[in-house]
Amino acid sequence: MARAPHRAACGYGRKMEVKGQAVGGVRLRRWTDADLPILEGSNTAEMTRFLGGPESEPQLRHRHEVYLRGWDAGTSRMFAIVGARGEPLGGIGVWGSGLPNGPDAWETGWSVLPHAQRKGVAKAALALLVDDLKGRIARGDAAQQPLAAFPSVANTASNALCRGAGFAWTGTLVEEFRGVHLTLNVWVLDLS
Ligand SMILES: CC(C)(COP(=O)(O)OP(=O)(O)OC[C@H]1O[C@@H](n2cnc3c(N)ncnc32)[C@H](O)[C@@H]1OP(=O)(O)O)[C@@H](O)C(=O)NCCC(=O)NCCS
Image (cartoon, rainbow, N blue to C red; front, top):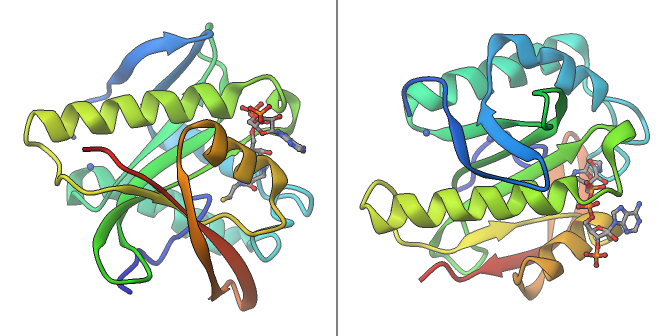
């Protein structure tokens, strides 16, 4: 299974852009150099509980660089999730990946900063991301393939998010992530 190296929490475009309509005041915009604090605020023990634990400062900076470069390299589209006044709420992205049984897929991952959780931010952000991806597929700018997400089986919030967004549960897989073996649910959203 070919998959991007920066799975979960997250990992294509040109100029700074705001994607789609705001959903409940929530918008997505291209990740910028000013967004490192979003990663830092998401790097706590609690926030990374289902992701193998916090990253070191160099690992976090590397992730930030991958998010920045992914747009021009065409390997990933990472967005900052922002509120009505542009305040940072978290991050969400999409990158090329694959399903356990072989077919290519898009993969998505997300995080919402602690102070903004349980208010529907991730739900709104995922709806915007799916709309954007569907639009790009319709215009021929992105491959027609499903969207997958691989949250830990223990990650209640992310699994509820997938279920609520209409993803179908297709099984589990065990994968090493940040040196830890995680059992992941395989959620797939048909975009055709
Ligand atoms: C997962 C995460 C992004 C959810 O963000 P959020 O903005 O709080 O989520 P929402 O408010 O949009 O809620 C989405 C669903 O999750 C449920 N949910 C949210 N937080 C929850 C929690 N702590 N426990 C149980 N369910 C929760 C909501 O009830 C909702 O489900 P519903 O539609 O069935 O009611 C956030 O908890 C987070 O950043 N976690 C740490 C990072 C992480 O795990 N990333 C995912 C890697 S795959």
